[in-house]
Amino acid sequence: MASGYGVDKSHDLKLIPEFDGSPHHVISLRLTGRDFAVYLQLTSQER
Image (cartoon, rainbow, N blue to C red):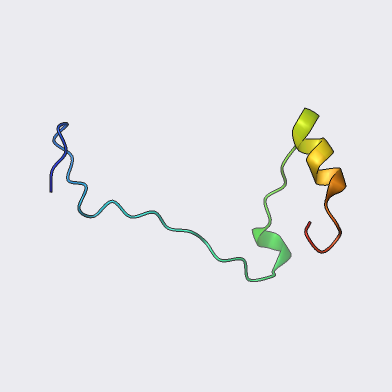
């Protein structure tokens, strides 16, 4: 199956990494504005 741009989309896969609990795989993010406000509303289990 080809798209109109000459790219074969039949093998368009996205890999989703699975968190294994090790701290060196955690990517720190900077939350600002509304994102930070939502984060503050999460329980410790949801974080």
